Image (cartoon, rainbow, N blue to C red; front, side, top):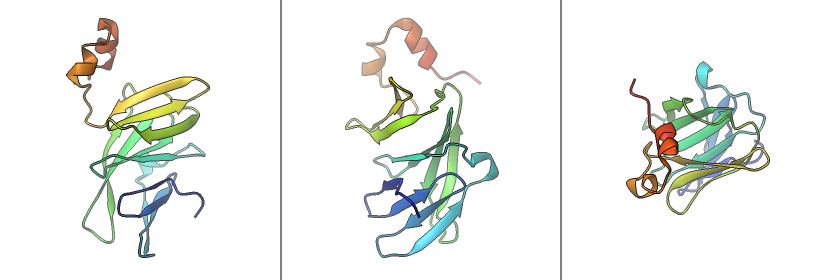
Length: 144
């Protein structure tokens, strides 16, 4: 299966990440979930981060994040909840991705860049208050 992308709190291990995600449960059962065609990745080294609520964030192509969630369907244990590409940095070479103690996703990429993603999709007010105005504007979602 190759190296595990992540291990969740229940002991399930996740593998793959380019064409599909394979879940190896703690009891040894294995399920493979094909990714939809528009979520197939191009990155040779995908990354997967699991937030405190159990949502999976898959980084398998530069400039795109796929949020997956578990389902009750044993034939399709994961579904794509959202795909984000607007204002997502082109993570050409992710060196490391992790959930920090505050519940944010931190991504070290290229030679010296760091990006922070908020799993709620919003910058908390206590952080936004410390940002310079042009950076707050860049981080605001577009009104579409």
